[in-house]
Image (cartoon, rainbow, N blue to C red):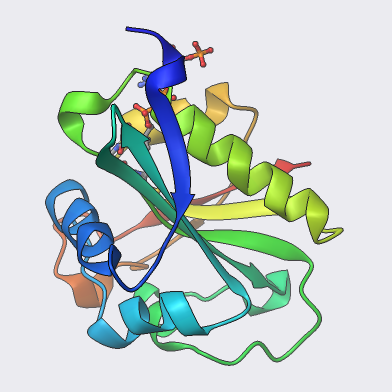
Length: 173
Ligand SMILES: CC(C)(COP(=O)(O)OP(=O)(O)OC[C@H]1O[C@@H](n2cnc3c(N)ncnc32)[C@H](O)[C@@H]1OP(=O)(O)O)[C@@H](O)C(=O)NCCC(=O)NCCS
């Protein structure tokens, strides 16, 4: 199974439901419908779907942000629509590959896409929050060159997760 059968494509109105489904079955967090709708209409939001042998199996959504505006809570982040300051980072808001299709290079390809999109915007930092207990994802990001920054207490509080704290991880590009 080679990496050549992995393809990326843009989000459209026709595959918005697939994006929702991938997040729903892969992530402990839930996103409001308005967040999904904004995935198509907001110019500072970027989304890419990953296909394995033409099956949609992964998705990443990120957004130009000002790092002084990095939110202290997930609820605030998903409900904020206005970018108030000049963007100086790209913030990964959701990132998931269906369990069965992990470790095949799909996540790496999606991250590479975000890195290129970041550089195209003349932005040099990528930021993500990761639940403290999600050691696999934290180690994955560290292997990709991200650095662990602050611990944000109760970041996922409103999501009702057992461990609501998150680490901020950043990558210079
Ligand atoms: C994080 C995630 C998106 C990665 O996607 P993926 O398709 O499995 O990633 P890849 O197959 O591209 O990763 C392969 C690389 O990661 C490495 N890797 C895999 N698991 C790892 C781990 N737990 N720790 C460190 N490295 C790891 C592999 O060795 C490989 O390295 P290489 O590129 O140097 O060969 C995926 O695991 C996922 O959806 N997890 C659940 C949801 C989640 O936690 N999302 C992040 C929330 S912010």
